[in-house]
Length: 181
Image 1 (cartoon, rainbow, N blue to C red):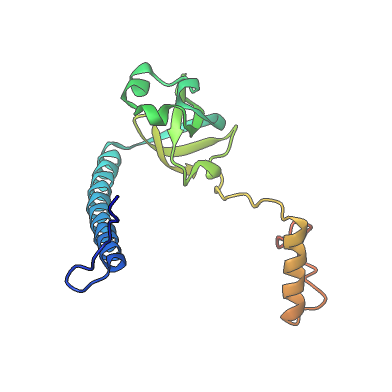
Image 2 (cartoon, helix red, strand yellow):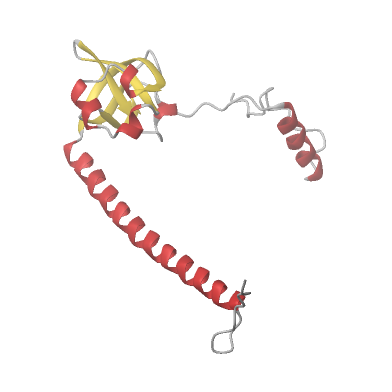
């Protein structure tokens, strides 16, 4: 049996050649991903413009909202057929609302899903079955603050003590929010 030895090419060691090849492949992958990312970004901006052009202002009564799979949401069959297969089992924000005499399931934008109140009437910008923005018809909509955990409350108190407010604020309630008078 002959023993195979790897000789350096042009005076460069084998490990250096392997490192250069890996480096070139990584650079090629980064360049390809940047071109692909730009293409996807342009496509997303174009679809967003189309949605904004087709948007209508609608007054609706929100009955219920929750995250559920598209197949369980009761959306029209054509919506399910046009959705890519990898997205069908993904949970999306669904809002059941009464628009005029009809009760319809609508898909909400992720950014505004938490702002939508249930059992209240709102004015929304809707493009097809997609809710793009929402405004309160009779009241302002604001995101509800979640209850602070014990550790977060202790950190807040420690931070107040460090800032020189040793007594704490008497104007705060148990959740750490300022009380309004």
